[in-house]
Amino acid sequence: MSDTSPRLRIRIPRRSPSGAPPPWWSGRVLVLSIAGAVALSLGVWLVVTRLPRLLTTPEGGAPAETAPAAPVEARKIHATLFYVADTGNELIPVSAEVPYGDTPSDQARRIVEAQVQAPAKGALSAIPAGTKIRAVYLTPRGEAYLDLSADVARGTTGGSLGEALAVFTLVNALTVNLPDITAVQILIDGKEVDTLAGHIDLRHPLRRALEWVRR
Image 1 (cartoon, rainbow, N blue to C red):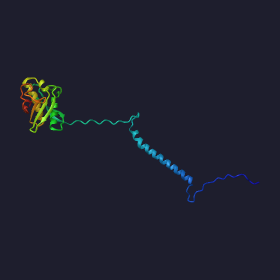
Image 2: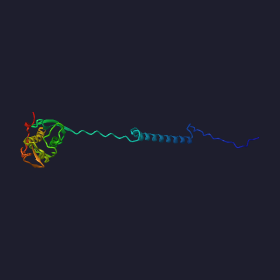
Image 3: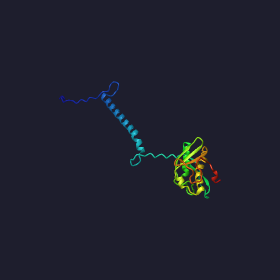
């Protein structure tokens, strides 16, 4: 009896004479290669963009804050200031640090500002409390004009001795620390005055007077 049923035929792809895979297999390899390249690129992007943030983010998710820079200490110079001795009748020199001034007039102002401030505990200033520096002017002749608030006149007490100590505290503070300043005239509220308290003539610049300073 002859077999007349249909036969199932399976067709096996043949390799090309050169041994290369059939076209459908080459296309699948190409797709897999592209997918691999995309995955690799995505991984590199994640490492570049996300890893630095993960390394700098503390536990809890808040971004790390940069610590504030330490303040730069202001430049200062060593100066000699003058205060009333324990005897009450002379001045004593005291070494102190005062802010640096960019110009001679600015430096002169920094020195007298330090001089009129309330002294350290245990020291006594001849300058009345509340005295303010309004301005400091320097001339090419080496003279300084020191403009003070009226508090210096209202608060000066102690007769001629107290007045002399107040005046020469200021004159010596400028002439000792700044050798280019040879004399100082004290003004009050921008005007020339005869005296602070009726004794020391302030109508002209006064020179350094170290006889009032303890040796």
